[in-house]
Image (tube, rainbow, N blue to C red; front, side, top):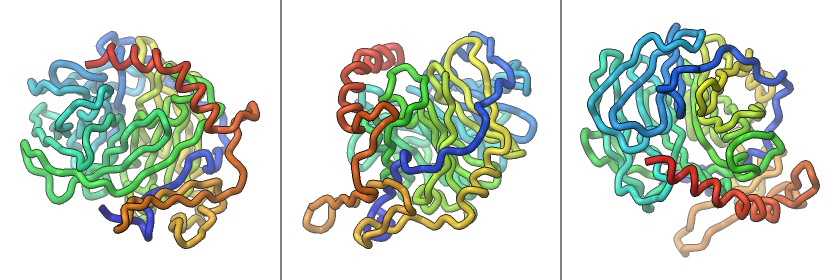
Length: 356
């Protein structure tokens, strides 16, 4: 594993800067019943591309900017659980077939789909057993990064170890871990737990800004050199996305607007104009967070760094920022999380059973 200094990635999102922005504005609504379980969205030139959660064949829906389906790119390949979508500079669409709510898959997959409908399957294996993941990033060179989903707010980041081979499997390696804390943004299907669960990802066309989203918030990271690992170590800008029923889709347009959308027929696609410019304004002097064993303060944020097990098998953790984080109602984060997890358990089970 590639360690970042002496640590893996460790930025807790609650220590991020909340963007000073208006609430997202509705652009249009997706009424097509074929996209009732919208889970991935990306933009290439003047077209929007969207994928559904799951499905028995590959289907990528081509939308205009009024949310109307203009075409469907189809491949006969039967995926297991498609959760996210990204586009390479050459227009190739990459589908993240990485959903695994019950954590039982021996392999996950990426599907590289051409605009004409041809597809190539790449199977992948985790080094440490099954994970559920709903977020896929591509760097400037087209290298994929998978970010896992966790109700406890600890998301691992994986990338292929070496070149992708078809059909594979190609082994993955873990390059870091991100920690997310609860926020007070309303929305999502499972309450407070959903504010920490990563459900989607996106990058700008030039790879200079990355985004991860939960059911309720988006986190934007500056990547001036296109380095995904370095970007995820920097303090992000948090943009609240309140009121989304089950928000999983996120994308950037060419002018730096952030788009977000939720599952559900008639759910709106919403826009935050100038989102990427706010990242530049807020992080112009930001540097990657110092490693935990250097005693850094996490870039001035309340941050928890977690190192991978060292040679002696010990795990190292350093907490910066003093007292435990509290939510808007004064409840300490850990008790709040445990209570929310108890309440949300049945809801998460219902979502799991509803998916393949």
